[in-house]
Amino acid sequence: MLLPVYPSTSRNRNPILSILKKHLPYKGKVLETASATGEHIVFFAEKFPYLQWHPSDKSDKYFWAVKKRGDPLHNVQEPICVDLTSISRVELKPEFNAVLNINMIHISPWEACRGLFKLSSTVVIKNGLIFLYGPFKEKNKKLASTNIDFDTQLQSQNPNWGIRLLDDVVTVAEEFGFILLEKYQMPSNNLSIVFQKST
Image (cartoon, rainbow, N blue to C red; front, top):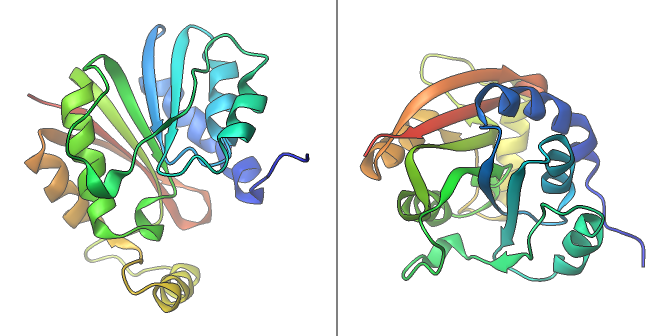
């Protein structure tokens, strides 16, 4: 069976890698939420061989693809189911240096964003990080026309989806003990946002 591929991954993985290189430790553990087909996490695992990468997703639909991609590597763990819209009891230990979330917040209900930070507050070690990547709205900044069209398209598919206001995300982050550390402009009108655990 052919491995599923998202064309956007090949376009954004190197720009995201450049940000991860600025912040990730040499050794440790990284949890990826919304891993989907595993293309990002396996690519990053190859670049950071001394980090242990833990894929997860709300559905096990593509776990076979994550496993097949990760098989040649020693540092990609078994994928696990994590539904960020219903975080109650967390099975994971508080041992992760970072949580990675790529292109999810705008194509999921707001509860998933809150769930991401709630989960991270229990599994990320002190001074650990959350990395977000995707399109965001910013106060006092005009949204790019392509993102306006994208936002309209998202909300036509599901009224609970849409490009989020970065200030709202920062407010949720602070509620769960994370502060905004860095913001990076990325290609195609996206942002990379880095939060650090402060408590």
